[in-house]
Image (cartoon, rainbow, N blue to C red; front, side):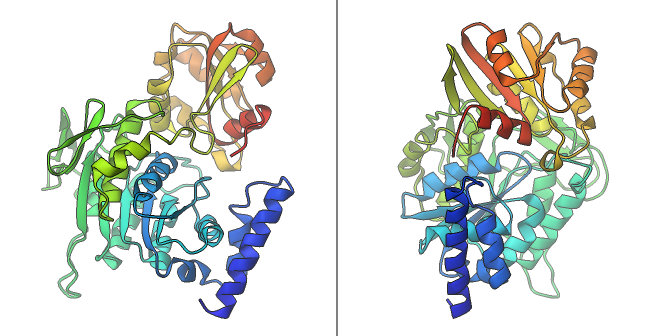
Length: 415
């Protein structure tokens, strides 16, 4: 690397280490921020010489990144932003901290995918899904799909692993060829992991016609856009690969959605030449992902933490959670988005019949939503009060970003 990049990388590692030592965080942002101030091209310099996978989408990025890093690890050391810092500062800090590695698997915020594509020149990009998320500050879903599509037109040589079940992703992953530039469409490998949330993909992004569905298939009623035939498919508790071979997936992570994340990880690793049979056993070693799914025993209660940040991820959280007392916590701070109206897009009916407790800065907003959904609840003010309010056994905790971190801090959880 150029001298400036070497200095910037060294300062980045030092700043991150000092942040951790001072108890100010894991250093995954501040180190990259300082490094990029010294050398604005530091991310590009750190990416050079590595085979890189980028993983982006509204939901599942952090978990899929951790699983993919484990799968690619069959080949050698892998740099990754395992704490979920998914903007260029986090990528820079992760690569600087890792030192020289042949591979990198990076989670990328969907808004920054085009920028990170430009800087890292990845070998493969995985596109998971697109749905509404923090609409008070984030782009509308169709706008995000358009940004992805435009970015892939500029990087038509990159390999793409994309979700065949999400019409917005399929449209973004297959931009039209540009005859004037002689650019072909990207090489796309399709995976199918199911799509429970449909409310952001009823209208075709290409022509505006209605999208219809039958079982796992979908198609536009006004143009040729339709579900492509997937190469990788979730079947029962395993994954079918492109050869038709079935691989049983044994995860320590809950829910069918994580079998889908595992299928994506195996597809990403295969783009590096990793055989599924060699990678699948490594996925079971992944337990907690930046605190998600962590289980803590306290005062006779087994407490499991689930992160849910938007309507689609709340549906998946309900699927993962056991039929047990459940604490819901909602904040509306800057990382969460200030608008809580998205709560009315979530069907809380699956919680009926269990003990439900609510807390957080915006617990009263949640209370109104649960009243409308006819879900009885108890409002508590502290996490200790929630623990005392439920009998010994499992306590499920579902929280959005900052509420999740508040509870982790109370449990003295560290990454």
